[in-house]
Length: 267
Image (tube, rainbow, N blue to C red; front, side):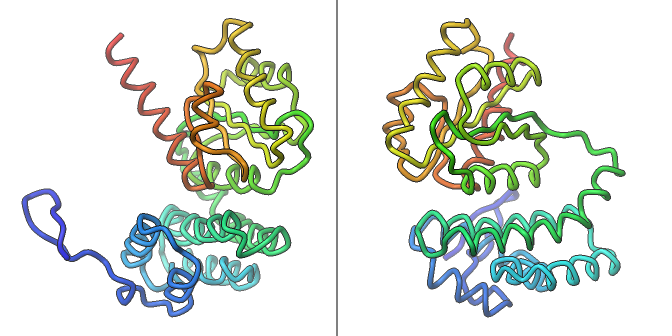
């Protein structure tokens, strides 16, 4: 297969064999089931340099020591911090998020992978901070009232921060008033809510209603997610978007910023 890109030229569509790292090839073949996700990650890793694939593989395997070592080595060898973050750490954690969503791995494995990503980001964050790169946006995140689950939320926060967002984490069991106070305090244009229990999902709707009651609904874009949450539920409660996993959460937050920029241009 071929696809077009600017200039009218054609380029081959990436295949699994274009990925140098055998472990990543096996992860995609074994754990990714949706055609769009297979295509997206195949393309992502096929264009990544082998050294980036090796870091991603170690992260997916939860090997924080290797991630630490390979990240330091790549930086010492002249690789840009942003390349490592995007092509290795965020790409690898994207696979982890899907495996967690589909119940191929569970909390202990995710925590090991999160520790591995943190080992890499320990090298990356100071460089990005010193570079003077401005954050691209601000997000408030929290698990709704009555729900004490946070692993999915924490994955989203890690990915959002890696993508350049400032994220204020309200933790778990977050009330409507706490969400409102945080959005006002941090002047956040984006709010993310998570729920893992069907019994706490309605609290997402209650929080949205509270923003309406305070005449703040038009000031913030609200995205929701969590294992029992669906697009239909998100639409019914009046949210602005639904993220099925951490990568979708980041994509949605970026979409909100683009929409905000467009609205500003036409005002």
